[in-house]
View (tube, rainbow, N blue to C red):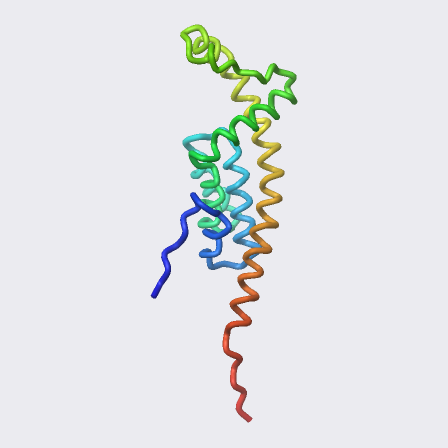
Length: 162
């Protein structure tokens, strides 16, 4: 009986176990996807990541799983942390007052400051994405390598006839 692939919404490393490729290539694709998961490219991050994975000939399925680590559960954490890191680097005030944010004045202020917010998120996302990408590469590589070794050990040894 075939098992259905695990979706990346839960555990991305478990979903990555379904990818059948060399551990190094799949891990590179996964790391690229995790990097793009940290960027504020909301609508196009999957397309850009897949384009780059295709150019580098890295595993596109692993790239997609990596990008999908940015899901409705993780996006608030990712975006707030990228904004925080970027605003620290740019010397901006990193506090966004939630009470005024939902007022007409707060929305107008947010729109007027949106270029700075996007710049802060881009800088923070690049830095955090690079760090997360390196961690994701090694986590994926070692998990996939362990799977490869385990599967090889479970294969029956060939019978040599003389």
